[in-house]
Length: 159
Image (cartoon, rainbow, N blue to C red; front, side, top):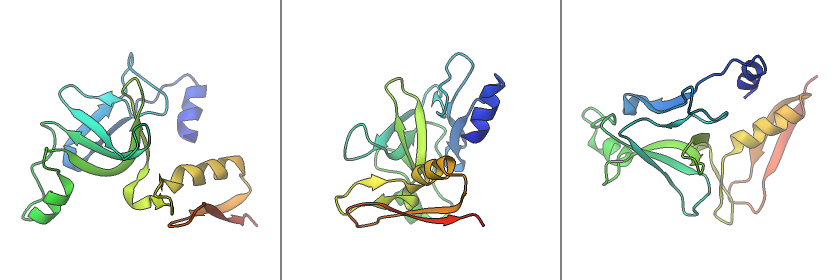
């Protein structure tokens, strides 16, 4: 976000997009007249997406569908079965949310998610980034809390 904020302060927009090698290019794009700061844009024409989550309105796994999605991993049907669901949606492994205008925001990775004792999925990276941005004297920030009632942060100070 520092880079985006820097260029925005100079009135230079950065148009982000989102895609995977498995989606053979872009899935969402920000463009001149359809742009939302901090998002990776709207879905390109002809594709669909949804957020796989137990609680509507919360972050979850980004799932995408369209003709741009690959047919599968070469000679690896098991990996393909895990990546593409029965409806043909690619499970990205990325965590995000879609706002009320349809813009996609990336908030983390599935493998980087903490699951609390209450079953809530929390991406630690945005929390770590926020702490680091607010307290620049810190050298390292690590958020922990898997299977716990609360999160904790381990901090080291620059020397």
